[in-house]
Length: 79
Image (cartoon, rainbow, N blue to C red):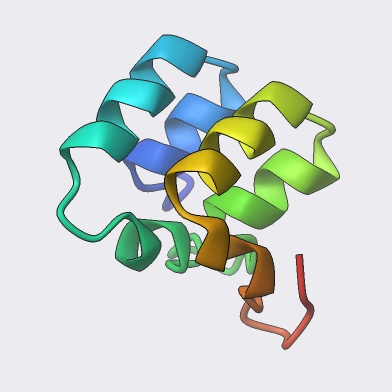
């Protein structure tokens, strides 16, 4: 396992409907979005979307949780 949470997996696999559904059912989407991958990968799902140029996923995330724009990854880098 690469340490990804379900939001990482949806972004990495460009599963936009799944990502949208996951964001809709989470009580606090920011919590899952702020979580870096567990196994040394410092990317949050937001950073992964930006780095991998998954702009539609990034748009979904920011629509559901505008605060995600100000997230820092485990190295202190902003989105």
